Length: 330
Image 1 (tube, rainbow, N blue to C red):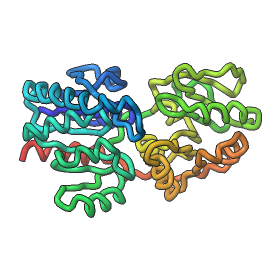
Image 2: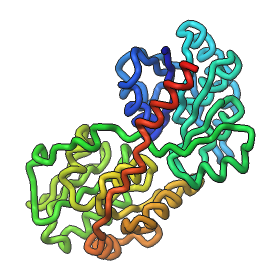
Image 3: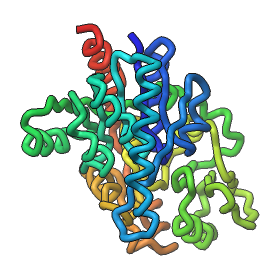
């Protein structure tokens, strides 16, 4: 079979595709000039994209024209590649590809990671043959909203390497190992609270991924910082407790691994991270909502983070591969 993957704008729309691509021969990827371009190393095709903004902005005036141009470019590429199917992980990068596939009659499968459907995926629904979801609640709601669409709850396409992390690659170990990360761009609020809290975190060995350009000047025997880290699975295997944002991929990986977690959801946008964090709360993860984030509340949350049981059912990688393969061969 020949498959085209699409999705991008943030790492959260790309890494799930990376979990699926090794299961297909010579997959192609269509994206924009964003992080997806740096993460995909083979058969990458770039098109014009435009960020879909909810706010009033002069930049929105150019959006329809860039989307139309991107759709034309994607249509040309799809005619050349002749895929059996297009798989979309969403993000503003994906919509022109999905729209082009719909116009060409190429089957489209989209996957929604969050509790609530993102804007690009909502726009893509009319072109999609099948909608997959990470969360069962999302599938139930979408079935009511789109009764004529095939909607399947699968779980998340979690990367196999997440379960193969090697903790011995992290040289610093303590009685309790604490990993702090704020996503691919870092999180200033988390960084600031952690640095202030450090004197009161004796007994923890701390690995802090600050985000690019956000390193601190702190020196402390129990504290190691990095702006970016390639081997996150190793750090997850090393960690006893993880402080992180509440993107869907992060939440699913932590719950699937059974990691004690303090989740600090990003509050901007449509509130999807808050919904993801609340889902994690139902499985016993400690939650610290951002409006309440202070050094003191962060310390309390870290010290009270509970032990949780791995939620293996969240890993839907094999199920998604099966659905794609069966769809293209029927």
